[in-house]
Each structure stands twice: as structure tokens, then as C-alpha cells.
Length: 555
Image 1 (cartoon, rainbow, N blue to C red):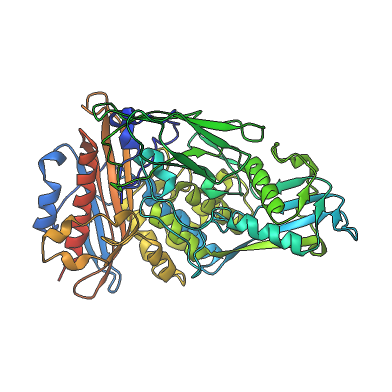
Image 2 (tube, rainbow, N blue to C red; image 1 turned 120 degrees about the vertical axis):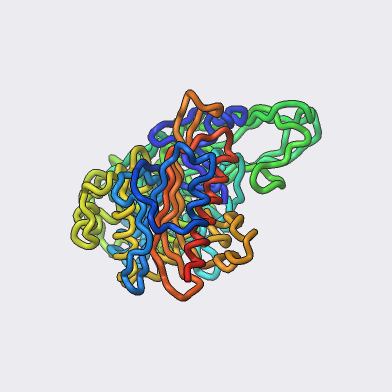
């Protein structure tokens, strides 16, 4: 799968496709996030793997690899295991693993709605309605009928970076509609007061300088725009979801001649008008008449606007859901979330609860976060872990709680890693020894099957779906479906490179069920790879996939 991450900690500004060559590495297609720097012996590493590591494009690069047999405990390969490596999204192995242990695979988020005041005989609530955010990442917006969470091969959370996506089919507002219907079923016909989102579960935290994440979500905090082809010289048809007065979309994007340049601009980026009437985004630019959409090779093309005030947006969405359910709200639908109306934190009475939404299991949520490498989901998982483990309500507190567990449960010293969030932003580092200690420790936990199943599968799904070059060798083709691993890519600026970027590192870590019937834990990382285009990043991704297939082929 093509997958991308922004330059950690830096907002990229307006998304303009003609800028792709300059900053596409932040998106790093087919990937997730990781990097490194190390040195050491390659003794014992098989020739087929060394041949990959010694390719000409890796002449100035450094490799690290550590592999153990989980059945026997035997250390199989150990190349540069103690160097600090930039691991990017491989960091999610830690944060989501800790959350799975602390919350449990079957844990479900419960999002309640309370009334403040009495309901009279005619169904009028003389008071406010409060939705208490629980940190539920999907709020029913990705629920499949079979109880699973819908996952797309190319997730909309990376649509702008990757220049396209495939939208999942469930209604993004399903959870809000369900809550509204329960409110109506409780006998409330009119709310003579306001609707408030209680978002105090944890302190808001910054996400990559884009916005402050809160424990309430609608459509993963993005608004999806769908673009369809048109005749040359005409404005392209477009649509967006979710539909809400909280945010609308306008577009002058048109189809030009086949010789014209591709330019799709979203403004403002990001929007900051949420909670005010008339909040809107605009799409402009040009699409060549013969344009073939990225990734999918077919229309439509997807772009997204960031929801920068999740609570105010969710408030409007909930008021509109109430209206659809036949519940009138006298308050202005589009306004800032009125947190000043909230009661003391934790003072709600069960007798005043009028609705609740129960999520799918955390095992399903973990699967979503890991398969598509959902950065906000991993950061929120760390926050929820910290809250459950120690009552921490800040990112700093959650990181401290996690550090204590990594030391006590997995024997991983703080000197072996540096984490700044739960998803792998900024200078996230870890040694290969630390990664293997985690993977080995997780294999003994009761949640291991859910943990392993959450990881992308080589040649099958998630960010490893399109990693199939290894299948050109018939002796390795059987590795398909036998490698469950997290990917990671970190690309940074390099003024001396033709592309202006360098692949600082790429990593792959997880589990392999080998041809000979053993189960391995492995991590492989390469650092400082020159790149002239996105194809160079994809090539590294395929090389590491092939290395994992070589490990599967061990006798």
C-alpha cells in the first residue's frame, strides 16, 4: 500500500500537486515511518540478504537487523542492534501494544449522552444535552455489519499526501444518528437549551502543528471531497462528506487540455473557521484532460480538509442528527462548543443518561490504527493508555506511564529509545534490541493474537498489501501472508539531493511464521538512502519486503 507521513512536526501548507516532487517524501508512499544510524558486523547474515544490502543505492547507507526464534529463544541474526534508529511509525508497535495490554482486546468505548434538567409532559427538555466524549476513534463511522471496522487499501487520512484515497462505505455519521435516535426514543422532542460536547477526558494535544486533538471524532477529523472527471474547459463535478452546516465546500477546479499541468489547491489549509457560520473551504486549480488518478488508476480523486475544532464540529453534527431524528434544538447549530455550560467533571448521574454509543472492540480499533498506520489513532491510544494506567491526562504524563511499563514489563531501558508521541513523529528513535524486546514480550501476553493480527500482512493487506516483488522468486512466493509487520519510513530535506529529499530511514518489524514452522520476531532498518524520486522510496520498501521473505525461507 502507498502510505505517507508529513515531515514530523511541520505543517505542509496548502496541498498543491505541482509541489509533489519537492515534498512527496513526507508522504513516502507504500509506507509508514522510520529511520536510523548505526554500525557493526554483518557476520552470519545470509548472502541473499547481503546482496540486497550491498546494492549500489545503499553504498552510503547503514543497515541494522535483529532476528530471534520465539520458539527456542535463539538469536539468529544480530546486525547493529544497539544503535539508536529513527523508527517513525514502527513506534506504533509500542503505543498500541501498551494500550492493548492495559485496556484489553475486548474493551469497548462507551460514549454517553446526559440531559441537564427535567423533561416535561410535552417532551421539552428545559436544559442542556451533553455528549461526553470517550476517545472512541470511529464513533460508529467505520462499523461494518459484521462487527468489524472498515479499512481501505488507500486510507483517506493520507489522501492529500498520496494524491488519492479509497473511501470506506459506512456512513461517517452513523454513531451520531444512533445517539440522536435514542434521545428521541427517551421522549425528548425539544431541547430548550444547548448541546455541549464534554471533551475533558484528556488535555488536548498538538498533532504535527495542524490542530489540537480532543477525545471526540467525526470521520477521523477530516472532510472528504470527491472529484470526478469532466470535459475539457469545464468545472469538475464534486461532492463532500459529511454534509453539515459546520463546513461546506466550493470548487472552481476545472479540466484543462491534455498538455496542461496538474494543480489541485485546497484553501484554507487548514481551515480555522469551525464554530462560525459560513465556514467553508475552496478547491481550485486544473486537472489535465488525460489525467490518470494516482494509486487507484481510476476516478474519483479524493482530497480532504482538516477539522481543526473537533468539538465545535461534532456539536453541530450532533444537533443536525437530532433534527433528523425529530428533536428540535433551540440553540444556534453552528457555534463554538459552549464548554462553560458543563457541570463539574464526573458529576453526571446515571438517572439522567438518555443515550449511549458502544464501540467495536479495541482489538478492531487497534487493527484499524496499525493496518493503515493512523497517526492520530496511535497518539490517542497512547493517551488512553496513560489515562487507564496512571490517570495521566497529558501527552507528557502518558509517555511517562509508558516508560515505566516498558521498563517493568519488557525490560527496555529509557536509554534505548526516545519517543515524543504515540505515532512516531519528530525524532522518534529506538534500538533494534528495544524493538525485539517489545516483540518478544508481546508474544507472551494474552492479547498477542489480537496484536499480531492487527499488523499489516505481507502481500495481503494494510501498508504491506502491494509489497509483492518477492514473489518474482518462486522460492519466496510462499511468504505471502506469513509476515505480519509494521512498516516505517522517515524522509527529510537534503539540499544536495536532486529531489531535495533523502530517505533517512526505512524499517520493518514484526513476526514471521517461517517455511520450516518456526515463529520469528524481526526488525530490519536501513538509513540514509539517497533518492531522486518517489520510486527510490518504493524500491527500498520492496527490498525490505524481500528481506522478510528471505527470513521466511529459513530452514
